[in-house]
Length: 133
Image (cartoon, rainbow, N blue to C red; front, side):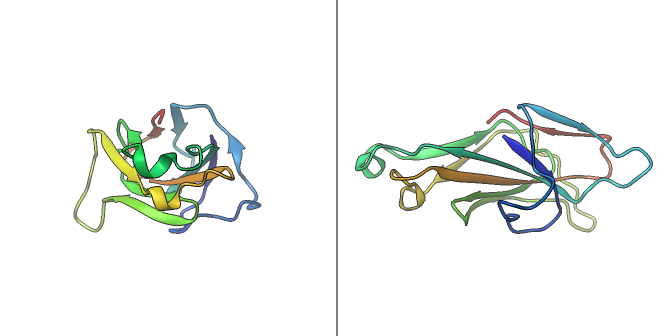
């Protein structure tokens, strides 16, 4: 996958500067002497089902063993899931798995699919972790 330090709430452009390859699982130490970013974006491309398979296969899903600080999941430019983030006095720490359905109508069989995940970052944590998906 690739990772980008960027707090925006919608996926960054493909040509945004700063994308770098990162193996999963990922662990990023907090910024020495600074504040952590509001989020990290992760992205990957993958081949979808063969033509005609998506509708009758029971569907595709994304499994996240954890997403500690919440975030959003995007498939081919459309948001397909959201895991609540810390807001104001409410602090989350998702230590449970999440299974998010990938809508068959958004999966492409004729071109690579683009998966983008916004992983929120808490300032309370010294190390940001992102799982193998």
